[in-house]
Length: 477
Image (cartoon, rainbow, N blue to C red; front, side, top):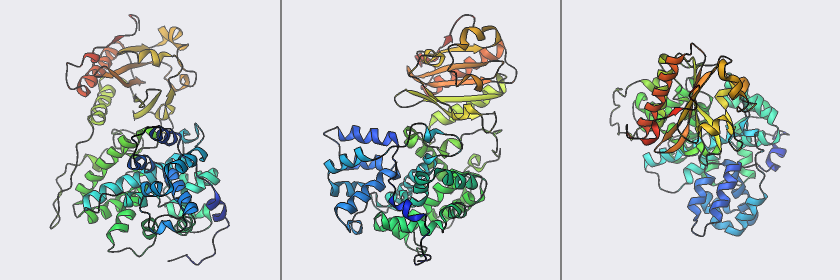
């Protein structure tokens, strides 16, 4: 095991002694499930596989209660069954949570690392299903746990973690960027923490370098590689290399491997959206013309690649209609309505927040790209979202509406105004579309409203969608 006998960096001890904070959404969902008499361990596991800090806490507590149990335990649900429900409740109550707002900070935050781990678990589950490697969650759990040193660095020294995170975004490899902050190779730090925190055998086995021909740890390593590289960007050289590795593993052409990965990323985005994680699957829907986006991105390539010998078909599900529909509508708003910047913001599950999901145009650091608006206070957005309606903000009505806009949002909107309209699908609010910049006018506003109605009709299953009609907020809007 390379590096195993080297003296550990002085940074490792504080990392090993820290307790990782869990996501607030994780704590809320676990408490909800624990309050139900019908909850089973497998339902808890679904949540634990979405938050590496929560899963790590379970394995650490199991080692305290039953030393050496990591030799037999396979996944988080197995560990919870060995701990017991009451001790698990007490553990949950004792765990810290990521401070509100910290995981929403632009640029880099702990949720970036948590998202990578959760995506690795998701991809590992899909790969395991494809390979027929069993129905338990041992492989996804191992994938979730592959980078404990990165998670711990965010908890102990967030500034160091942010430096490493930014270096990765600038093209430095993850191993080099985090090794510079950890004081030793990332792989060594991960292995030391995996031992200290009593990870299951497969998780530790996959961290070693001698796994050629061993399908289970190889599956874990591929899933981890896919999650790491795609979180940094779809057009990076490392992502292409990971996709080549995936095509070999699946025994399909690279085009089909890309299609499979893009579909899985989209499904992962839908599955993990409640956690407010960065979601690479949504980046696939950024349209041509985006900052840093190649108009010939291979996710638009038809699946016409030649088969490899003995290639097995890969199950590729249809992308959610939401994303494909909104991508097309936003392009048309840009092309047909005179708007240079278009944003689709979607309600979260309990309709308490409005968050940007797709953005077209604007600068890379545009505040609207990371919009996360609390809807607990009444404002123009909460009013719009009571029913399908629209408004055109312009200098002539600015005084009327300015006071109804959240103060934090006003600087993000174009001074010359913009169009916005709420979207309802099957009589339920979905979110809203906003367009500004360019050349706005009466004809553009009417066309904008028509395209918004078209989106609602398409998502609702046809023109019979009763919520799609929509009217201006006021006659003068």
